[in-house]
Image: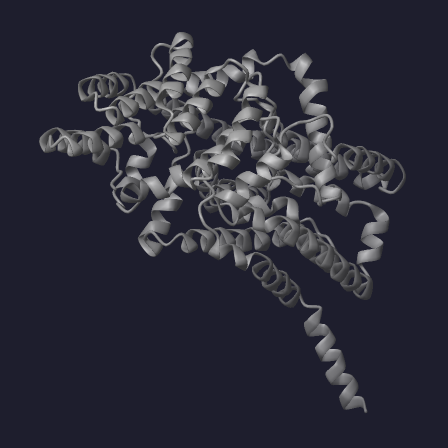
Length: 559
C-alpha cells in the first residue's frame, strides 16, 4: 500500500512540475492553431510581404538590403513602415520553405510557442506561485483575441517584438543585479532587433523606467539602469536615422503624431478604443479581422465592466505592498497599446487590430496576478486545474468562432465587411475579391455601399469604374474615370484603367500614351508595369516588353 502511495505521490509531483505544466500549455497551443497551417493568403499585406516578393526574399543577399528599403516598398500607402527584421524573417522562411505558404504559417505558430515559454519564465521571474504562472500562461497562449498574431502571417511582427523585448527585459533585470558585460551586450542585441522589427518598441523605454520606480524602488538599480536606458534610446535614434534615409514617407508618418487633435481623439477614439480592447480581453466573442473604433461596438459595455472590476480589485483585493506592481501592469498595458491610436488615415475610423494586444496584454496579466483572491485560489492545484479546464473550453469555443475568418481572402474580407463596413477599406477589399472571382452581382451592392460611405470621391468613382470595366461597359467606366481625373489629374490607377480600355477598343496609340504617363508618375507600381509588359507583348514589341520587365525584376519581383 505504501508503495502505491509513493508512486501516486511521485506521479502528482511530476504532473505539478514546471516542465509538465509548460509542456501542457505548449501542446494545447499547437492543437489550437495547427489548422492555420493550411490557410491561404488573405490579401491584406501578406501578398505584399511574401507572394509578390518571393524572388526578393529567395535571395539571402537581401538580408543586408532589407535595411535599405521599406518593409512593403511596393505599396505606396505603407511606404513609411521601415521594419527590416520583419523582412529578414520572411527571407529565412523562404530559404527553408520556398513558396510553400504553409511554412510561413508554421513559423508563426513556432514564434508563438517561443513567446509562451518566455511569458512563463517572466511570470516565474516575478516570483509567482507555479500554478498562478501556469494559469496566466494558459490565458496568454490560448486567448482568442491574440489569434491574429498567430494565424495571419504579417501578425508575426508582434510576436517577434514580444520575443525580442521580453528577452531584452530578462537581460535588463540580470544587469541590474550583476552589471555583467554579457548581460549588457545581449540587452543591446535584443533591443536592436526589437526596434528594427517594429518602431513601437520605443514605448518599452518608459515601461523599463517605470519598472525601476514602481517595482524595484532601488536607487542603486536606477543608477545601473541608466546606461541601458541610454542605449535603448540610441537604438531608436539609429532606427529613425536609417528610416528617414531609406523611406521618403517617414516624415509624414511622424507628422500624424504631431498633427492629431488629441483633445478630440481622447473621447472619440482613445477611451472607446481602450474599452473595446478591454472588452475583447474579458469577453472574447465579438472579435473582428478588421476592427475599427465605433461607439456602437458591442465590446464597449464589457470593457466598462472590466475597467470597473479592475478599479474595484485594486481598491479592495490588492495588498498595500503589491499595489505598485498592479499599477505598473496597468501602465504597461496602456502605454504599449497607445501607438495603435495614431490614425494613419485621418478622417477615417481608427483601425485597432487585435494583434497589437500581444505585448500589452502581458501588463494586464501582471496586474491580474496581484489580486489576492486570484493568487489564493490558483495556489490550490485542484482549483487551478479546474479553472484551466474551464478557460481552455471557453477559449476553444472562441477560437473556433473566429479562426476560419483567416482561412482565405473571401472569408477574411466577408468577415471584415460584416463587422466593420463603416471603413471603406473593407468595401474595397471585398469588392476586389468578388471581381477577381467574377462575382459581379455580389460586387455591385458592395460598390453601392462604398458610394454611400465615400460619395463623389476618387475611391467611389474608381470603384464604379472597376465594376463597369469588368462588365465590359467601357463608356460608363470612362465616365467614372473622367470624374476621377477631375479630382486628381495625375492618378496612375485611373490612367491604367483608361489605357486598358483603349487597348480593348483597339486604340493602341492612346493606350500606350496613358500607360507611359502612368509609369512616369509611379514607376514602382508592379501591377502597372506588368500591364505595360503585357501590352507590348501583345503588340509584338518584345524589346520594349523586356525593358519594362527588367524594371520589375530589379525590384525583386518576377512572374
